Length: 431
Image (cartoon, rainbow, N blue to C red; front, top):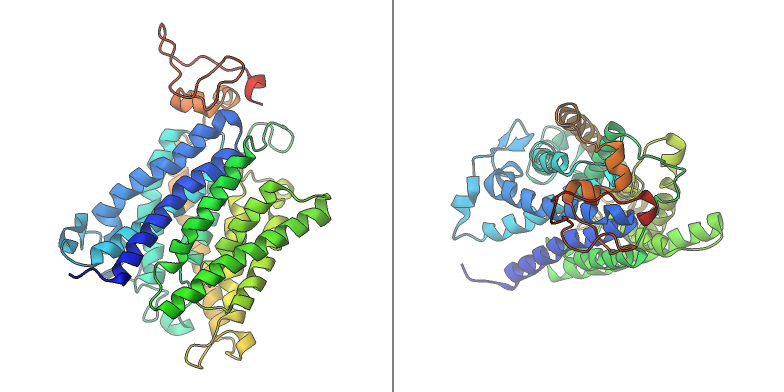
C-alpha cells in the first residue's frame, strides 16, 4: 500500500482527536473542586487505556462489517484487527478508536466529585461495547439507520457527519442517566465549594478541544473542497456560540465569564459536529449562535429539575447535539441540486430522518445505560461514601492530591511512610 496524502491526513486527524481527551481532562479537571481534580482527569485518561484495548479486540468489529440484526457488527469479524494487517483499513480503525474514547470520557463530567474510580473503570468498557459500538454501527456502519437499514430505508438516511447522534446525544443521555442513578453531590445547589477551582485549566482544555476538533470533523473529508468547508464551519460555529453564550450571560447575570466563553466554544463545536460538511458558513454561524444561547440557558435547568449534572454534560452536549442534529432538517445544503433542508426547498424528508435518528439514539442510549449503570450501582456501588466525598475523591480513590495546600498534600503520591494510608484533609482546606 502506497501512503497517500489522504492516508496521512486521516492519521494526523486521529492524533488530533486523541489529543482532545487530555484536553477534556483539563476542561473537566479545572471545573471541579481542587480535591477532585486528579480523579476527574484520571477518568478521562483511563478511558484512553480501556477503550483502546476494547477497540482493538472487538470494538472496531462491532462498529462495522457484517451486522447482526442491523444492531451491531460481528465482534469476531476483525478480532484483534488481525485481518487488517497490511491493509489501509488499519488507519480507519485507529481513527475510529479516538471517537469511541472521547465519547465515553464526555460522560464522566456528570458524575464528578462522587464516583468510585473502580466502578467507572468497569462502566467504560461495558458501555463502549454495548452502547457506543452498536449505535455507531446503526448510524455509520450500515445498520438500522443507514440508507439500506430497516429504519433508514423507510424514513431516509439521517445526516451525521462526525457524531451528533453517535457521540454527543449518546453521551449526553448517558450522562443524565448516570447522574440520576448516582444522585446529587453533598450540598448540591447550596455549597459554594462546588465551583471551578482552576478556570485557566478550563480555558486551556477548551483550546485543546477546539484544536483537536478540526481533526474530529475534518478527518473523514473526501475532497479538498469538502475539507475546506468543514474547516471554516468548525471555526465559525464555536465562534458564534461563544458570542451567543456571553451575550446570554451579560443579559441574564450582568457580566460575561471566562467559564461561559469556554463552555460556549464547546457548545458550538458540538452543534457543528453532525452538520460540518452539510451547511454553509452562514448556516454554521446561525447554528453556533442558537446553540450557544440555548446551551447557556439549559445548564441552569439542573437546579430547577433537581438532577446533579456536575459539569453540564447534559446542558452542553445533549442540548447542542440535539440542536445541531435536528437543525439539519432546515439548513442542510442540497447535494447536486437535490434534497436539502426545508430552507432550501428540500421538503420535510430530511427533517423527518433527523428526528427519527435522534429519537432512536436517545431511547437506545437511555435504556442501555440505565441497565448498565444500575447493574454496577447495585453490585459494587457507583458512589463513594459521604466521608470520602467530604475529604475528596483524589485522596480516597488515588491517595494523591493535585496541589500543596496549607502544608497538606503534594502533587505526587500521598502516602505517609509509617502507615501507608492517606491522611484525611479537612474540608476547609480545599473548599
